[in-house]
Amino acid sequence: MIHSFFISPDGVSRSVYNDELIDMYEDIPHQKRRASNIEFNNDLGLWEAIDSENGKLITRQKKRQDAIKLEIEYLENKFRNSTPESPSLALCP
Image (cartoon, one colour):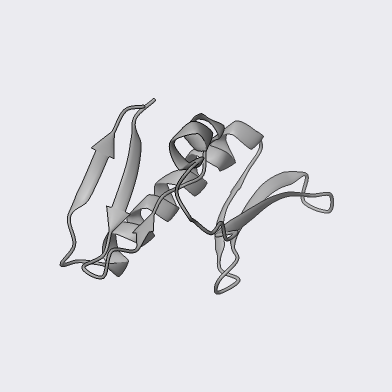
């Protein structure tokens, strides 16, 4: 799987967490912050992805895997657009 890292001019990097990244970050000081949540909405019978920063509904889907896919696309686009002057790197561990 290719992982996208978005690096701002001040050196702050952002990426969607994936267990495959554990070894890469083992000896590097870092912080993890929840960017979104995926929860099942029992009333609607759908999986919902919600942006943790602003409470925005990202998507509602019947299948959790579809909600996760759209959540990742949303977050990567958000990270990319939050630092328009910074380069984005696509790395494959």
